[in-house]
Image (cartoon, rainbow, N blue to C red; front, side):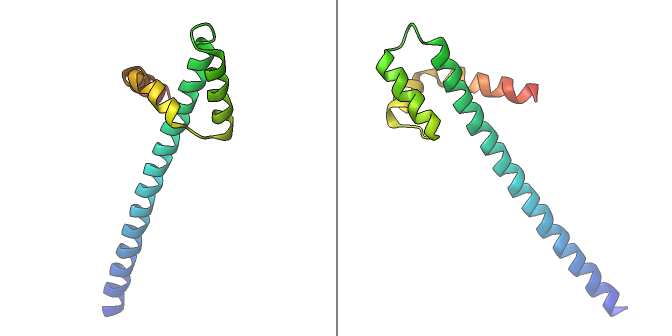
Length: 96
């Protein structure tokens, strides 16, 4: 009888640990997905802004995006468009 109780609590403890690990994995996946959607938003915006944006600045942005980096210059440029970015992220999350 004592062995059954010990096994029950051991199983419950491992189940709880697995559940916590799953929650962490889901949160990590969600953050990665939002990051990739943000980079996709910037890429789409650069394609649209070919006529509006300075050519040299646009090329710098494209080169740093290829490397997977986000520079302070890009942050300054896109900080005014936060509402549009958040709407894009919500729309992309709703579609998937």
